[in-house]
Length: 172
Image (cartoon, rainbow, N blue to C red; front, top):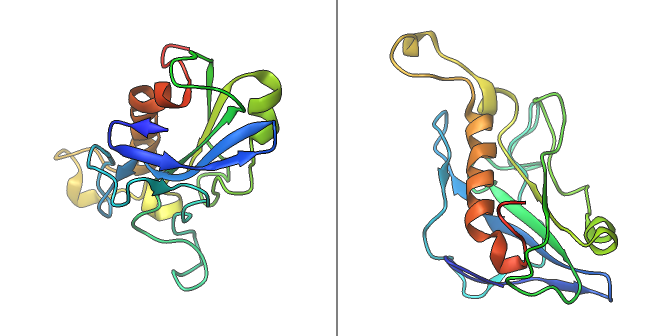
């Protein structure tokens, strides 16, 4: 798929679907809003054949699970044979976990996309204190504590801008 920020190369899964995994949709500094990724990809084409890293989780560390930076990734599945401009409906899945934990990797949307003729995307976003911590020093100065929501908004904006390259209709 050819995005505005570069090409991505994913996996063709039999005659069911194509998947593109670990696409960087945003960046974010610690306790700051996410910024939609508009910079060219570091690889062209980007190897989008593996899930990207999960965001750092509660009671874990970066040597065993998740990273603080570079975890804002989007995964996309489309029915086999779909081309840019096919204008299929789009579903964006935000994994749960009570806002304390969770990631997109366990959820494979191959058959959902293939059997229902839709584009399916999932995302990783900040959880726990990295996603929701608020600071009294910011009271009255700036909004804090909803970093994860800015991640999800960035994923929605990135999807709207890029989903047509996968065959999706950003208005559906």
